[in-house]
Image 1 (cartoon, rainbow, N blue to C red):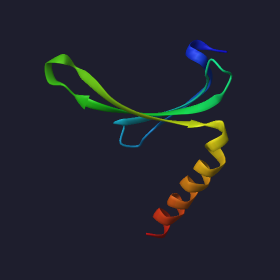
Image 2: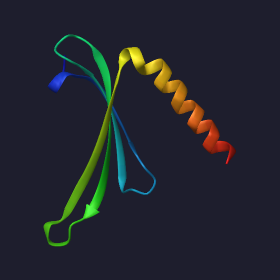
Image 3: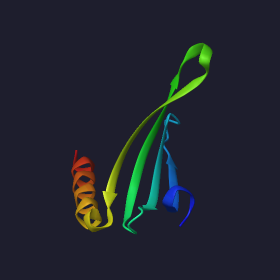
Image 4: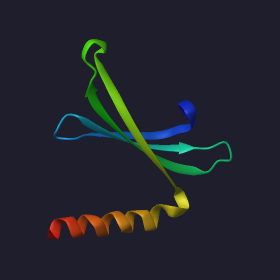
Amino acid sequence: MGTRGEVYSSRFQAKSDKRTYFFNVKENRFGDLFVNIVESKKHDASAQGMEYERHQIVVFKEDMPEFLRSVEKVGAFMDRR
């Protein structure tokens, strides 16, 4: 098990350069695997420099097949628009 239960990590930088998406596979203390998806968005905080707004969701291993099917469905819908 890695740092804070991380077993794998990947990231994607959006073309806008303001958003970064992190895909982290983690293991909880019971040995259950889950994906932690984090969106980090840059905000200019003037004198304080850059600040980041973060949002995250957690998807457990047993929910991944249906989660991925749902993501594919909404992606296909968006492609048709």
